[in-house]
Image (cartoon, rainbow, N blue to C red; front, side, top):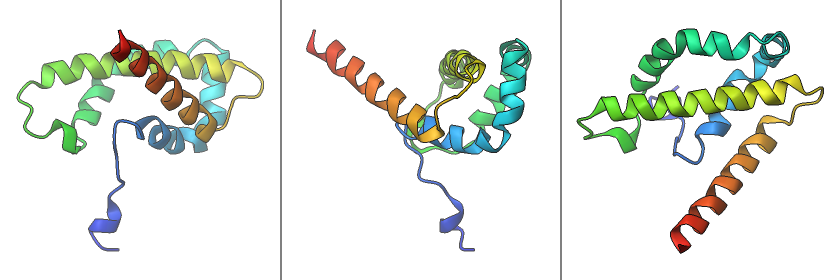
Length: 119
């Protein structure tokens, strides 16, 4: 395997899709945690470790940034919201597929950004 093929093309728009595809093999465990009201407390307990691990991932949009504290805030905010979303989705009897979830998120976030830019 070449070094180039070991990388996934990551952009801010594709992060939810990549994350969902990464965790999906464990969706049965996530569903069990969510249905027993344990998913959000587990994420909360380990949020700093999760953020630190994500900050170790080399992404182009963070290159040259001198302020990791801002990224820590953003990641904590994003993971918290995404964790609550997963908790909500997995408490339902038939959660959407990773592709459906990521497309819905991306589409709606783009719509919101367009509306905000128009004002």
